[in-house]
Image 1 (spheres, rainbow over the protein chains, first blue to last red):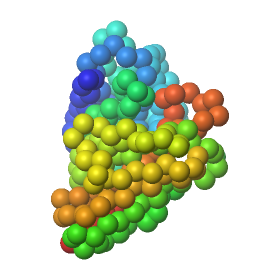
Image 2 (image 1 turned 60 degrees about the vertical axis):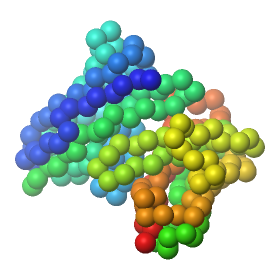
Image 3 (image 1 turned 180 degrees about the vertical axis):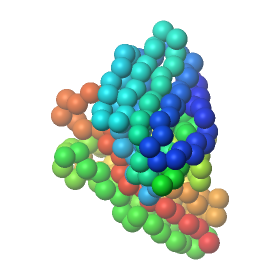
Image 4 (image 1 turned 30 degrees about the vertical axis):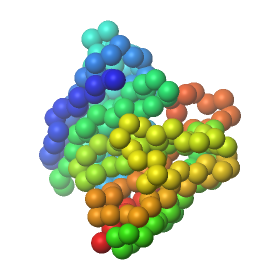
Length: 108
Length: 118
């Protein structure tokens, strides 16, 4: 099956700092998503980004499918950005395979 | 729109008892619902996929007799953990796919249920 690796595993930022999270994947699939899991456990889809670049406010994501990686950029981080960021890809049977996640803590 | 609820949000049960977790799509009909399990500081692992009116498909290593899934209607799926043991303690998350022609990649996630077995 698809292998999904995320880095870094943990990240501590001062409020206002920028960061880049990385997701490497093993197969040339074109259905990558980024999710944010808040401290209470709720997952929210941030981006569906099979290729190219998308932006949504302070967040943007870029996927280079031919090189099997995706990047999530967080600019001017806020304490509300804290939580776990997952990338995930869809495998056969429409099954989502998640990476191990990046735990982000933004300090005020 | 596209809200998924779970009930209860947390539950504590004694070892050997069974506990049922409900997953509801509140404002759409869900063709397919998914059940995930998440241990502390770990990723989500898919347990099973359920389609309305048919038997659930379980992932390798998931005991179907222990984790009973019922998807009796287009808005409700239930997960019953039978004869629970402390190692079943985990965060259980469901997600649902809207049947009304939404893209296949789109899933809506419930808020999760934290199960503690004592």
